[in-house]
Image (cartoon, rainbow, N blue to C red):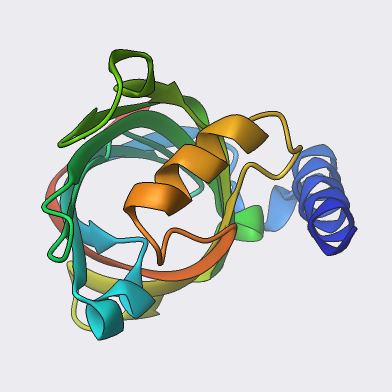
Length: 190
C-alpha cells in the first residue's frame, strides 16, 4: 500500500512537471545541452552491515539538465553464501524544473545470479523506481542519496523471494547513493 501511494505521488510529480511550461529558463533562441557523465553507485547501503557488498558504474547522458538516460551495471556479493549477481538496466531519470530533486525508473532490468542455485533462478527480471536529491560538490561533481523502490507494482514477487533468499539485505525499499562526475558537455542551438 505504501509503495503504491509513493509510486502515485512520484508519477503525479513527474507528469505535472512535464506539462507545466517553463518559459523562464528559455530564451528566444532555443539551446540544447547534452552532458556525458559517469557515476559510482550502490543501491544496497545497508548490506554492508551483514557482509553483503554492492557497487557499480553508471554511464549517463544528461539532456538539458533535466533528463538522464543511463545504463547502470551493479555487482553484488554475499560473503556468507558466496553468491553474487550482476544487475544491468536501462534507466531514465527526470529533474522537474531542472532542480536538485529527481525521480527515475528502470525501463528494462535484468539480473544474472551466480552461485549455488537452480538453473531457472539464474536470470531474473525486475523493475525499480528512484527518488533522490543531488548535491553539487564542485563544478562537475555531484552526490545523490536516493530511495530505491524495488518491484513497485508487485509484478516480480517470486523474483524478490529468490533474491532475498540469496541476498538477505535485498529489500523492497533501500537507500542508495550515486556519485556522478560530468566528463563532457555539448551545447547546440536549435
